[in-house]
Length: 215
Length: 116
Image 1 (cartoon, one colour):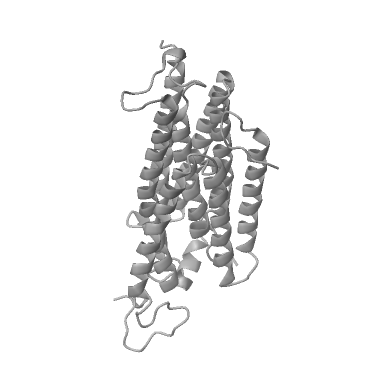
Image 2 (tube, rainbow over the protein chains, first blue to last red; image 1 turned 90 degrees about the vertical axis):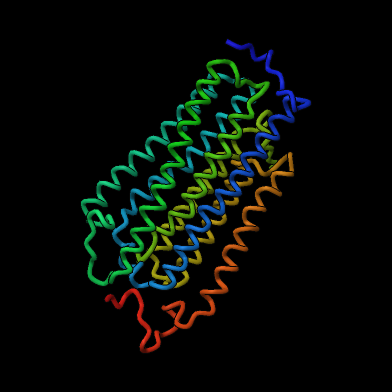
């Protein structure tokens, strides 16, 4: 097991602090791409919704609002536990860091579990375009567009969240090897930035999907 | 209260307060969907989402604090997003009959709703 005191910067960096800062900037650069990726998706939604407002209002009523709301609370909470894990790591509280990371992973898995149950309910409700779809009265043919957006957006988000969970498990493995300590915890910060970004994507998907046509 | 997001010195309380504010905002967003405020509901909901995103970006993703170069990267994403939205809108905004909720469709124009 490597000793944390032996952590030295890679050859291209002067200090371990500089290496950490560059790692963070690298993640932010990646998130610029992600912003455009999800931004384009939400722009498409905006165009659809303004073109077919009534059809989207009718179709949106079938979204399972309690699932979306509970998942919002879960993701917002997971961002908090992620921050606690980073702070614990930086403040040399290894045990707390591991506990908060497990809590974050647990919340991520809970989100995916609820999402899976919601997909099951959606299938029962026949709102799966192509596979099992039945247009409700008033939806017209454009209602299906809402559900295409729903499935594309939520599955892309779920893939990102799954990657995030995988990264957290990888962090636990690195902590176990002594590679993440109060001396060098930048990898944990980088994963934390990614995790909270995925949370932010959900913050915008929530009103797009679950709050349409409720009144 | 001075908020320090630097992990070595950060305290839990500011993050817990931020988390509570995020939950309250999520609740308010949910309530606006059932208030019957019509076209204003999405404005409120996406406004709230923007506020929540700002809190997450600044505190949980630690835009606050050094290195300030992070701001350049974060703003760049939204800068290009503005281009994406703006240039795409030059097409849609000049189309006749769009958006459909505010402008009546002219006779003879077929929309997706009309079917085959």
